[in-house]
Length: 267
Image 1 (tube, one colour):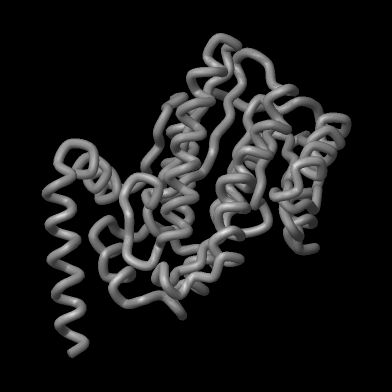
Image 2 (cartoon, one colour):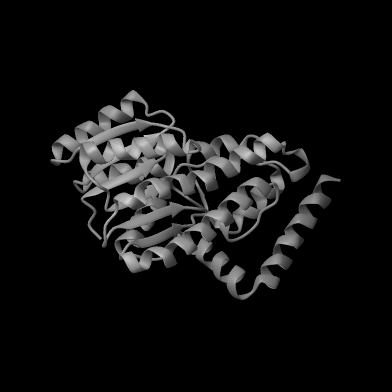
């Protein structure tokens, strides 16, 4: 698909930022939604848009605020038009064993990642027409569980399920739905996470590999262009997905063995 107007959450950093840059380079008009959009990012996007005859709008909003995101989306539609591509890329992660997670921490992760996905979808879908596409960024952690990822796994498995239901419900309207399940990607969120993550979770993630933001976003856009349902960037990540789908017992055995070895190394 060749989007003329795209809405992206989390466009101030990480995957959302690079996807926004790539779409602007194509001449796509863009609305960015984030808790905060740095001034340098605004200037860069406005310059890219001006050079390609596109338009930009910026909206600072918390995805957990359903009325707020609804109002922000309506404002964006009034400024640059209705989206034919809407991508929910905003997300948070707290890597802790379940016993160490507070109720507030668990609720925050699920609130931003899953409820936020619901709120964004509910806000944009009424403005979208046949031929448009909604994409929710989940994670490989929405397909395969990891040590210390109770909140994140719960939220991202939920995003995959939400996207699946929306795919069925929006098909009669001619609206496509994609779910994006990347492995670990070198973003500021991942860099911060590594400082506090349990070494076991880091070891398990080595199995599915790590991608640069550039490589991940190139594959994501290619998948959206091809109108794929599930987009899993990275060869090792796709292998992990296939193992989870067709050989879950084998994948569990490999994970259990890696955890046993890591725990033994601590003693």
